[in-house]
Amino acid sequence: MNKEFEQTPELQILAAMLAGTFVQRRDLYARQLDDGRYLCVRKPLTENHLVAHLKGTHTLGTYVLDANSQARFAVVDADDDLQLARLANMSMSLAKGGLPSYLEASRRGGHLWLFFAQPMPGKTVRAFGQNLLKLYNLDGIEFFPKQDKLAGGPGSLIRLPFGIHRKDGQRYGFVTDRGEPLAPTLAEQIRILAHPRTVEKSALDDHLKRHKALTQESSAVQHGTSGVTLSEQIKRRMTVLDFVGQYVELSPAGRGLCPFHDDHHHSFSVNAEKNYWHCFAGCGGGSLIDFWMKWQGVEFRQAVKELAGMLL
Ligand SMILES: [Zn+2]
Image (cartoon, rainbow, N blue to C red; front, side):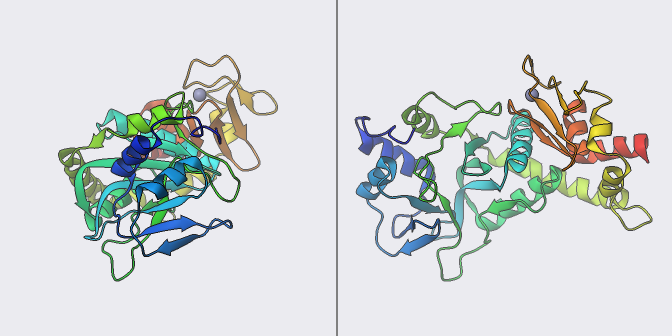
């Protein structure tokens, strides 16, 4: 995949498409150093920079907020494969609710991108993101933009997709919820992402409204008398191996046929030591609550309610 763009004609067109979707500002740009850190270059971003990014001679970062503190996309950043699996869960569930998203693989974990039909204030995007993470029990996962509003500096940035990671020399593309490439070539992926499906303003407003109602209702449900959240009490009550073992036939090594896709390869496994489950075909993974959310097709709060009734 590293040599992918060397033979590709019309790199300028692809570079323009890439910028159209992923670049918020042209007055400055960020360049990745060999140790993985980024350097802010206070010079205009040119087509040559973007072409060099695709060719792999250098790698760019993209700022999430534009100069007016508005964002056209939001990114959830998974640090490891388990978090990535949980992002894939969230992505599938969001898609059912009319909130499309795109999963990008990375060195470890990956990024989930959500695009908006029009630029949105950073503050609104962050309220949306924080609600989203809460709703899917992903508190603690990084969300971009990290600022409601810029105050002097250019704010947070994220690696511009389709470049080579300077640290490992690898190039990563976008994948489906099942972990397959979004399209066979990266050039085709860029063409798809030139017109990404977007989160409509109305869907976003609905989401925020619905979440407000839920949090008011659930703050009463969430906390038991012990001061420990219900979800914690549930997770302490039973191991993932014991719980999932009731629903999936597992080998002594913890492997089994995944109940969430048409599996012939024993893609499903439980890591007893670290207490989580995972499907290698891309169905996700996580705690026993994540399992129950997927098994029942319910959101976090509903799953906690059901599990509390079963286990506590
Ligand atoms: Zn699976």
